[in-house]
Image 1: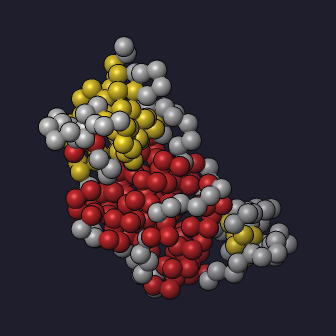
Image 2: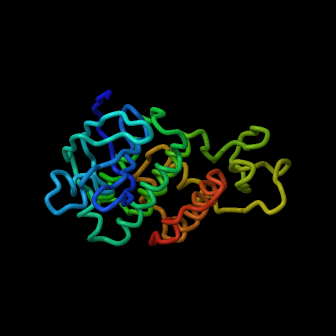
Length: 243
């Protein structure tokens, strides 16, 4: 069997049989990979705790017929213990992992930029210096940008007319001018649109000056935009504790 090595972040695990697990990993070079970790549910497993969600691991795998097989696993960093002690950060981290899995529709399709975004988000959540809600929204905006779903935040999503524009339409793709504005478009505050722009471009000093109500408004726009493109909601997003 073909043997390969890669590093990745464990996104999810599922029980398989009496002692095994199927792990879903977003890897640096091979994108999303599903593999069987044999015997990890046994007490004496040599790498059971290494392949839990939120773990950054170095893996050696065999290529299988339908699922690959984990041969070796070495922990590079475990974010789970730190995040589990803080509910807002844990739920934000869970939404990061679920989003990463949903945005990688094809297995073994390289997704280096998304992998780096996941690592950066988990690191920021673990360090605890930034509001977890802001970290999550920044990740969601950048992940959507990588996937080709970035919302228009200045020019009109319909005709491209330069903004700023006051209307925001999720189906249209972001801010829209008065001519392109469809029925039901929202009218977010300029502060909320500015916050999303700051998060997308990494202007953290400006983003951290935002008020709680502006953050809530911005989070609502981000969640609506993401779930429109995913075509169904994230299970973890309603659990995220907002400011």
